[in-house]
Image (cartoon, rainbow, N blue to C red; front, side, top):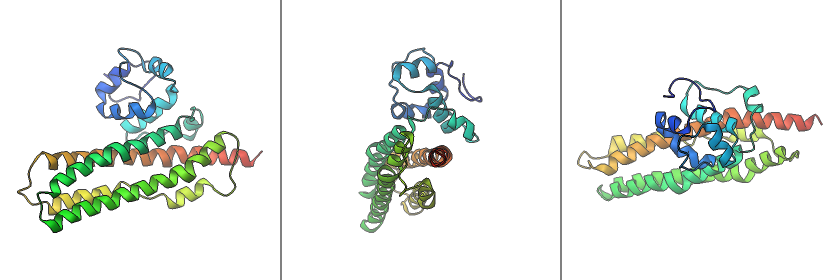
Amino acid sequence: MIKSRLFSSDSRLSDLITAHPSLLSLLSRLGISLGFGDRSIADVCEESGVDTAFFLLICNVYTFNNYVPSTAAILGTDMTGLVPYLEKSHKYYVEKRLPHIECHLDAIAQKLNARIGRVFISFFKEYKEDVETHFMHEERDVFPHIRGLMAGKRDATYSIGEFIDTHSDIEGKLDDLLNIVFKYLPPQVDDDNVLDVVDDILRLSEDLKKHTFIEEKIMVPLVKHLENAILKK
């Protein structure tokens, strides 16, 4: 079983997912489909057109809290899949995870008095709008900048420093939502929707923390290097 060591390309992908089921949600974002049988990570990645080193980098980040890839490791990895991965993650959060939580909150709100129900729904809708605005900025300004740099071009009107200065905390408000659930939910509302929404919020919060880590500890060093490399030309 794969448990305590960083993953390697010769490990079976099925062993990886069995040992760390939370990685299952990453597969589609990384461009890998189910049905890989007993094949190794390297074989599955090659067949799926995914860089093996990049795949392992993301999986290691999501699994090991103390794993921070060095700048050398980042620059030594094919990062062409980074922006597509981040874009697919945005889509996953907006189209799947957030609507799933919203559905449970709507069901819970129906069992609360009108005022408390409105607090739940209103807080979540505001959070959802903040997340969508956050992602929209990255997709409109940051990701095209990265693609340009990877193509050897630099837009002098934008730098990754602007991203660093404005990068907001999108997972913190989920903790606030969880506190609202714990603090204001009447004891008589005790059903599967409550358990499901708490579990969903905890899972999404953890996923978003890793997402933020990837942007700040992998994307930012990469872009700084690319910007500096172009300036030296």
